[in-house]
Image (tube, rainbow, N blue to C red; front, top):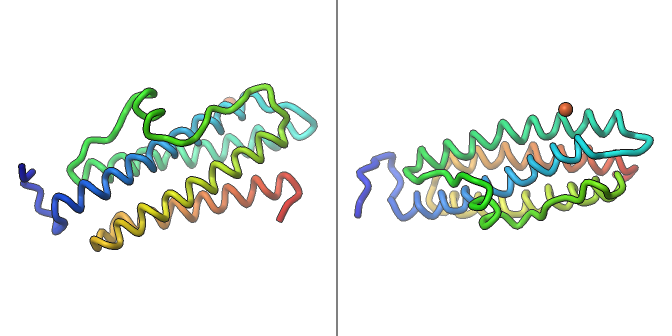
Length: 159
Ligand SMILES: [Fe+2]
């Protein structure tokens, strides 16, 4: 049934992009949650610096969650909500609160890398249907996650 939303994008295109954004939202939420958990649980000689870095990163990612969800709504779909729903959509695994700080950083780097790869796939789908507002939103997310990944790598002494 047609949904009577006239923003210049076919319903099927809007639904396809919204589905991709729903996965991106769930992965983004999972990375937010893990980063906040590591803010609480990290330990070691770099505690202060990592506690602060994680705070900065989870705050940025938390803000982005709302932007992605509201883009899904603007496309006429419902934003997924709830831990179980997010867990079913996301490929990000829960973190281990008792692991070494280096392992926390490695894991977050891999999560950001996976998020970036997923975001690029959604971007390609949005580009196919000329949904420029979504491609622009995703460009902002890729920029942010690439920066987060760099800072995590640098904290491990990597380039
Ligand atoms: Fe805190």
